[in-house]
Image 1: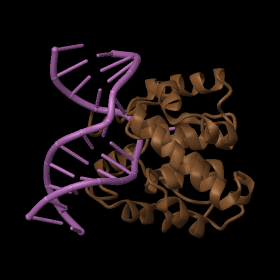
Image 2: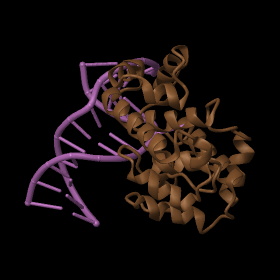
Image 3: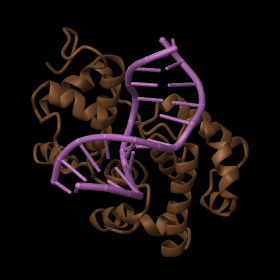
Image 4: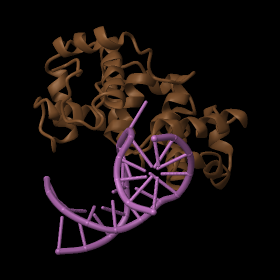
Length: 204
DNA sequence: GGCCAGGACACCA
DNA sequence: TGGTGTCATGGC
């Protein structure tokens, strides 16, 4: 909480995730896997321009067509397959309704999402926190890099292990988790990128 | 022109 | 469980 406050004082509210709708959050969460967000944005613009930002549309279109549309995001063939896998899950289990899916408890939905091919722990947690508004802490590359450099977690810590560090030290609060992870990304992008620990780091 | 970015999975031992 | 290869574009 002490670190959170320092970062918040430095960067302020981040208003995350950068998307217009919960479904766009899900698309972005899958497309950004090991990929710079700037490339993901181009892919999402393509989808928007073609009116493909609803579950129904994406469920219906041809997978090869989808792959071409998301090409700028990289790994486009595999990501098209992963988006399709999620849509198949959404329609078969929840009749295509995000509302119904979000009504499921965080822990149960997490288990279900992890069964979907192409959705791992980080993607699942991003969906739970930023699309479904559930109090789940997201661990990503920035989180591990920054907090291992400052010796709060081990560099090779497993996902769940790193996650426990945060959840066991913080109140379980969706807004807090949302803001915290957004601040970590901000710090990771702009300051804690190359130098292991630098003078201007707000959390040292 | 090499390196890297908001992972996940298949395959192997 | 742990290690390695694979997927690919765009910015610097």
